[in-house]
Length: 152
Image (tube, rainbow, N blue to C red):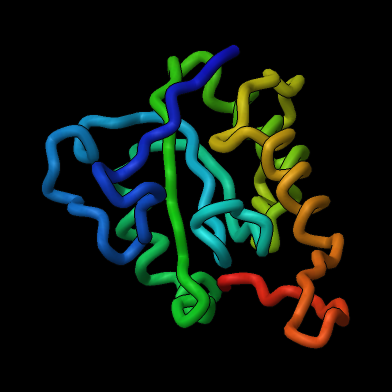
């Protein structure tokens, strides 16, 4: 099943504490979500929580969660996808099994997982990680090779 994951306009992934919860789209959304910390570009740091329900209420709940707020300095990101209510539990189980979040749901529904696309292209992320793990070298003034500094 293909989901359309929400992104904040012009800024990419939404920061949990900056999402406008008064927006009608947020208020009216029922679906599944993922919340993570680390880089907003490749999302490789730590998956904090996945789940399903009324997105407006979930955002309010997560903004009060001390376990989530402990990662605020590293950035806490959030995205969701609308999903038919009859698939919510199955998709939540898939996301939970796939990402293995730090804050696991102790009341995870006992349903067979429904496979969905993740919010980001995991093959592209794998290639980026592979590329970044290899040192690159540049010639310096003396003809010697030295490791290039990455821009981040």
